[in-house]
Length: 250
Length: 212
Image 1 (cartoon, each protein chain N blue to C red):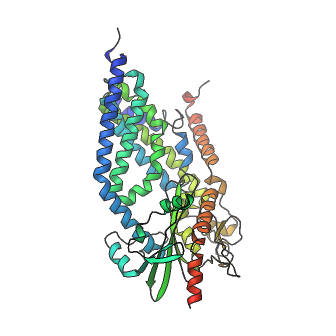
Image 2 (image 1 turned 30 degrees about the vertical axis):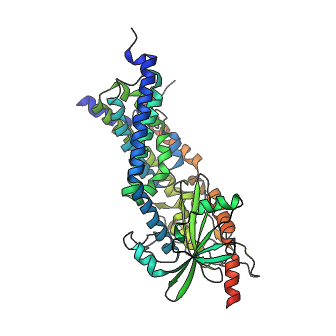
Image 3 (image 1 turned 45 degrees about the vertical axis):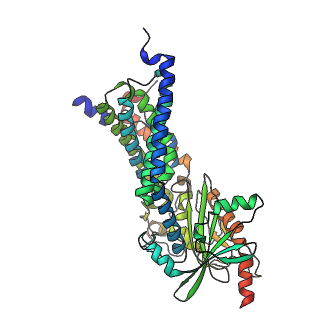
C-alpha cells in the first residue's frame, strides 16, 4: 500500500507549498529588517573611519570601536571634510562615506569614472587623510580604511573581511596585524609609490624598519595577506595624484 | 528517563559524531586553529541542530520521502538565514563574528546526518535531546582540537599568551629556553592528525569500538 506522502502529486504540491512558505518568510524578514541593517552598516562605516584615524576605545590588545551611540557625533567632530575625487577633480560631498567602493571598482572596470572618497580628519592638531580600500582574500571580499599623513605615511589602518578562515586569514582584523602598518611608508625613498607588502620571512617580525615597505605576514594566511598587499597597492595608488598636489601647494 | 539521558550522553563518547561517525570533519579542520572560533562554532551548531531537529521531527509525517533531503537542506538553510538576519539587525557586532560560520553550518554533515537518521523517526522532545547531545559531542572534539592547535601553534589560549613572549629580543617563558611555536599546527592537516590521535586514544580505551 502506497503511503499518501509517496505520491508524486503530493510531493509536487509539498515542494510548491514549501517554496512559497519559505520564500515569503525570508522575503518578509529581509524587508522588515532592512532599515535596521542599513543603519547598522552606516554606523559601522563611521566607526571604521574613526578607528583608522585613532578614535577608538582600544583596550589592551583588542580593537574596540567607539560605541554606535557616540559614532555620529564623533564623526562630525573629527572628520572635517569629506571629499570625492572624480577624474582628478576634488569635490566636497557630505555623503562621501556612503560611497560603495565595490560599485566604484566595478565602474572603473566597465570604463566609467570611479569616484574616490577621501576623508580629512583632524585630531590633536594632526591631519589625517583616510581612504577606503577593497580587495579579495582567500574566500571572499576583504576591505579596510587606511589613514595617511600628507607624506603618505600610514597613521592607522583598519581591515575587515567577509569570510576569511577564523584563526588564520580572519586575523587581519586583529590589532597585532593592523598596528604593524602604523608608521609604514607607502612611497619608497625616491618618492615613487611602492605600497606595503605583507611579507613572509622578512626578518623583521617586530616591524622596526618602517621604510622597507613591508610588514610581517600571518602564518597560514598567505593568500589573505597577498590580498591585503594587492588592495593597498591598487586602491591607494589612485590617491597618489591628490597627495602630490597637496605637496606642490605647500 | 534512562533512555532520554542516553540520547545526550552517547554522542559525547561512544557514539561521537566526529570520532565514531566521522561526520563534521570539514568544519573541524577549518575553524579549529583558535579555541575561541571552536567555541563559537560549537554554540552555533548547538542552536541550529537542536531547533532544526525539532522542526524536522514536527514535520516528519508530512515530508514526502522522495524529496526529504532537499526539505532538510531548506530547513537548515532557512534557520541559519533567519538567525543571521535577526543578528544583523539587533546584534550587529555578534553577527559579524558569526557570519564566517554561516556557510559552514549549512554544509555541516552532522546536521543533515541527525535530521536523516534521527529526527525523521522520533518525537520532537527526543529529537531535541538528540540535537543537544550530538552538538555537545561535536563541541567536545572541536574544543580539544582547538585547544591543542592554538596552544602549540600560537602559544596562546583564547588569544592570551600562555607560554611567554616569542618575539625575538624579548623572549620570555618557555621561549627563553629555545622553544618555538609549531606553525604547522595552524594548518588543516594537523587538525586531522589531532582528530586521529583522539580516535586512537578512544579506541584503545574501548575495544568495542574497533571495527574489523
